[in-house]
Every structure is written in structure tokens, then in C-alpha cells.
Amino acid sequence: MSVTDNLEAVRRSIDEACRDAGRDPSEVRLLPVSKYHPVSAIREAAHNGYVLFGENQAQELAAKALEVGAEGIGFAAIGHLQTNKARLVAEHAVELHSLDSLKLAETLQRRCEALGRRLPVLVQVNTSGEPAKSGIMPAEVVCFAHALSAFDALEPRGLMTMAVNSPVDDEVAACFQRLARARARVRDEFGGWDELSMGMSGDFRIAIREGSTCVRIGTAIFGARPATA
Ligand SMILES: *Cc1c(COP(=O)(O)O)cnc(C)c1O
Image 1: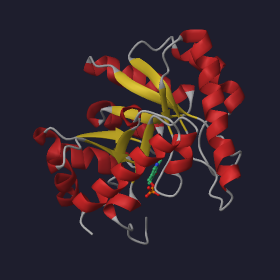
Image 2: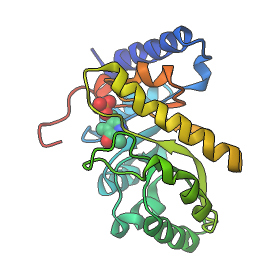
Image 3: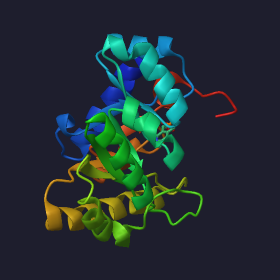
Image 4: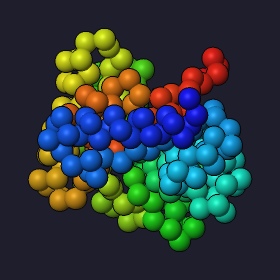
């Protein structure tokens, strides 16, 4: 199967999951995750109309943006970001899905201000309670959102999470429900915050049922990543 075939199949599954959930397929965007895959695969997806790609490492994102940015292709930073790599994201990313600390917000604010740009951000929430996963706790979201309003170069767009990796659908769904409830609280307070970035190759159907507006899909489109990934 080619990247083109896979994109079509995944988009079809997303549309089906939307219909099953009584949702309009136009509410769910597909963000292909190109990490560890070559720009040739990115270009093939771009020929199918996909122009924004997820990358989880700042250096790889920057290198790819320099290579194909002029072709109208952009990148979303979706992985945990260390403050010392914030400059790369401020310079090269279209949006950030993994804002998880005020220290990072402060650094990004400074970098974006210096560049005279605004950066759309999603706040990553740890909905599984696993210590290995990044993100603020669901109960902290409203307080975090208040603090974020001090950083005018950052445009909050919504929340992002990675569900627990479990064969039990209900446990996965519970993570997505926690994110949806956190969004409801932050929306009540501020309005906006529309995006729910949740769902990957293995769990995007569940995420769509729970209200996802953006599924981040790598393996099902580009194939398995190298073992070092
Ligand atoms: C790699 C990655 C994905 C995509 O995962 P797949 O299982 O390959 O679809 C989604 N989100 C984040 C944050 C990732 O790092």
C-alpha cells in the first residue's frame, strides 16, 4: 500500500467513525505524523492535498521545514518540547500541540515576540496518570489557561492528549472523556479552546466517538517507524 492509498483508507475510516458517532466528518481534521519518515513520503501526501504534518522532535521538524517549507508544506510540533529547543519551534512550526509548562510558555513567548509572530498552541493534558506521559493534570487546565493569557504571542486553540495504551477500549475512552470534560471547563470560562487533539493510529475511532477534532496518525499512513523510534 502506498502513502496515497493509506491516506485514502484512513480518511475513509475517519469519515465512517464520524457517521457512526453522528458527527460531521468536516469537524475532524487528519494530521499525518511524518516523524522518522523521509520528505519523499511527505511530498507524496502533499500531492494528495495534505500540507500540515506532525513531528515530535524539534530538530527533525526544523530540518524538514527548511527542506520543504518553500513548497507550501508546514509542520505541527506534537512531542514534548524542552525549553532549549523552543527557538526551533518558534522559528519553524505552524502550531504546537504539546505545551505542558508555564516555563515553556514563557520561553516561547519570548522567542515568538522576537520573531514578531504568534504561535497557535494546544495544551497537553496527562489524562492517563502515567508518569511517563507529559502534560498537566486535568484539574489544572483552567488555572493554566488563566496563566497563559499573560502570553500574548501564544494563541490557545485547545487541548491535546495521548490515551493510555490499553487493549481495553473503556480505559482508552476514559482518557478522551477526561480531555473533553477539561475542555468544557476551560470553554465555559474563556470561550474558544475548540480543538481536541486526540486519537492516533490505534485509537482514533474511539477518540472520534469522544469528540476529537484532530487525529494525529503516523503508522497507519506512513508504515512502521524504524526500531530506534
Ligand atoms: C508518533 C505520534 C503520533 C502518531 O502515532 P501512530 O501510532 O504512529 O499513529 C501521535 N501523537 C504523538 C504525540 C506522537 O508522538
